[in-house]
Length: 179
Image (cartoon, rainbow, N blue to C red; front, side, top):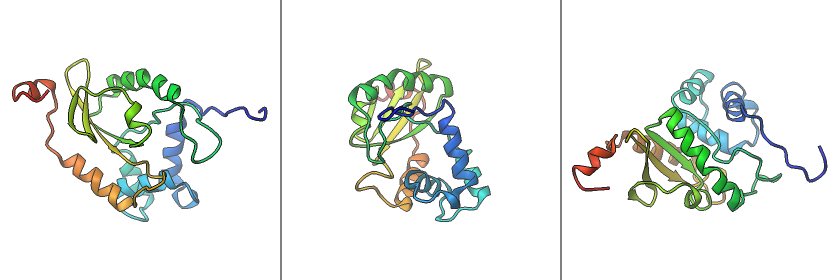
């Protein structure tokens, strides 16, 4: 690799890091992001391998930006990177058809993601898929960013989000005039 050349993660990078979170949690050192997410999903500070496996298998995971944004831990993606990620993200929604999405990156990523069709609050919105189904998206501060919160707060926020009785289809909103 040439000096200054950015490394690009492999296509299966999200799978690799989730597997590391499941299988090598204790050896992850200072991988703050993955440790906090794993703890939040499992609801425990020190989840067993089985609990980590169950937690990660209850959701899908991807990186919004599919390329390396820089060498340092605090590097942020450029605006063109954020804009370029919009179409692949929307295509992924059509492919995996999630009902709930947690987006981490409230101050930098969230304002640059594709516009949502349904707005409940600034941090709770929904994308409408082509079939009319809604993919509700909650935005939280990045777990490894400045001012990030403890995994317990993330766990509570995700738990509340999962428990909300939100409309699953755009037609449910139209009947009550909330689009």
